[in-house]
Figure 1 (tube, rainbow, N blue to C red):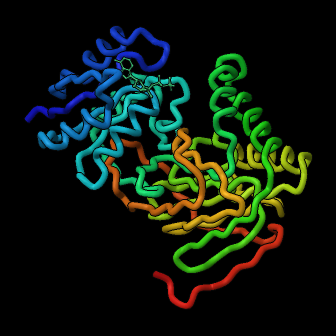
Figure 2 (figure 1 turned 135 degrees about the vertical axis):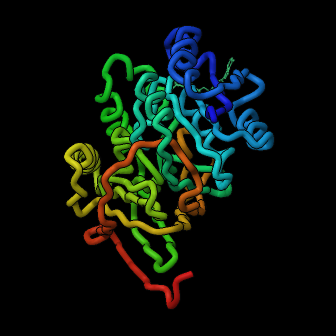
Length: 322
Ligand SMILES: Nc1ncnc2c1ncn2[C@@H]1O[C@H](COP(=O)(O)OP(=O)(O)OP(=O)(O)O)[C@@H](O)[C@H]1O
């Protein structure tokens, strides 16, 4: 029997000719998959269209657009078991990059046609769906702006520069991090919890190799003592992430856990998948395997943690994990 899918298509995403892109997607997929195409509009987003598709009981959903469209569609299919295909047509394509999905239309369609699915983790942060990561203490508005303007000119360096700028502007804060089995107190300039992260999300790269289907979230603490330290720490994060090694500096720590409760003094801004959602405290919980994606296989690494060397570090083990 021929496969069928609901294709949710953002006609204004990215910089390409969307009519031509849609034709290309149709030409590649329609020989094997009956497509029911729905366009997002300013009023009706991918979240609504995907929820409706789930309610109609479709076999597969394919989302095509930028990160906003893809994340919204992903949130709607959590725990439904309906496989989601991703055809990334945005500028940053963080979602596809983080999950190891090709960002050309041809390769993305090929991946969907192959039909291999994989259950990957998704998370909730203060009850909002989180596909990629949440950052505490970021000056995100500035960074977002810098990224968008600088991306085309500097490419990958724009992210490194934005990371540097972020850390330089940051003030340190006291943070308490509670996992299912311990409470960690330290001083930090940035705390990032990632479910999946593209290498360009430098501040999430403590462990290098963030595993998105291990049922665990990856937390990175960056705690430089001064601006020079901030620059060195960011550069180290960038370098080790590029090389696929975990960090080795005293002012960077990381650990993995199923859930994190993060409180800070004073309260810090919170950025979830690129949007500011408010201030700390936050509670982030992993939904293991909550998302079924058409995604190629990737190599896995052993979970690790490193906290030694962080300033004012206190670790209390809880009596029984829950
Ligand atoms: N038909 C439409 N007309 C105008 N705006 C739309 C339409 N469909 C979706 N949008 C808007 O597009 C935004 C989502 O864009 P999406 O994340 O898919 O791509 P993008 O922002 O272009 O990605 P990138 O920034 O990576 O290029 C939402 O703000 C949504 O309101």
